[in-house]
Length: 110
Length: 114
Image 1 (cartoon, rainbow over the protein chains, first blue to last red):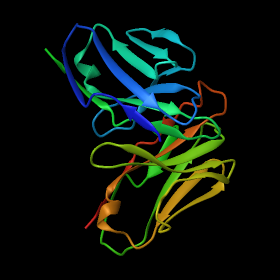
Image 2 (image 1 turned 30 degrees about the vertical axis):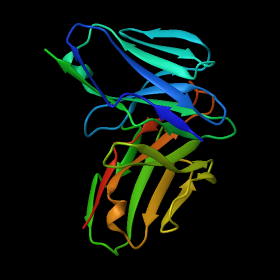
Image 3 (image 1 turned 180 degrees about the vertical axis):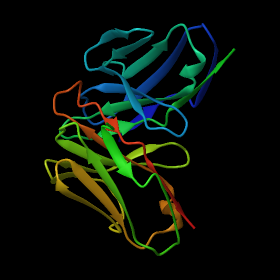
Image 4 (image 1 turned 90 degrees about the vertical axis):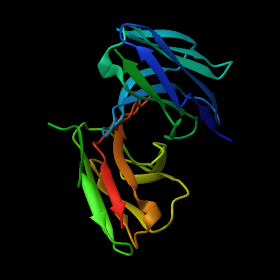
């Protein structure tokens, strides 16, 4: 079967660092994505990992361990505008299907 | 210019009606998708077309019928609407080889079936 798990909600303080974890079990693996979705808006692409290791993009970094079926999204210097849902998604092999986790709602407080 | 645009943004209708949602992308992408996001915010793939050919057809009632007149357009027609069809429907597109074929989403259509 295919399963993507991530925490339902997290709360963090402005200026802090937060790590959102994702574990997955899928039929084959062809990359892992993180998307950000603000309430009432469309998801937008944040990061893509296909090899093990850390990818850094400004305040956001994403890590992948394929052997452990594990990824995390690291957000540094949190801002109020980072309050959103963060969706972990995995692409399997043999097709164009990207499967999404249920998302982690992040609340950033002052 | 909006990259992936879908209309309408809101759709309120009665049970039993038939409705359509339209989607267009001006990114030159080869692949287009329909995703459904339910009240628990779970985003589930419904259909995918690559160059007008259906390549993904998940377990979706046959009341839902996608149509792709060309690779820039993917429409979704829903017959005999039911209460459980209420959700936000997102159109998306991607290009082969571009960052794992990351998805570009439209702004969504909030469908409410009364």
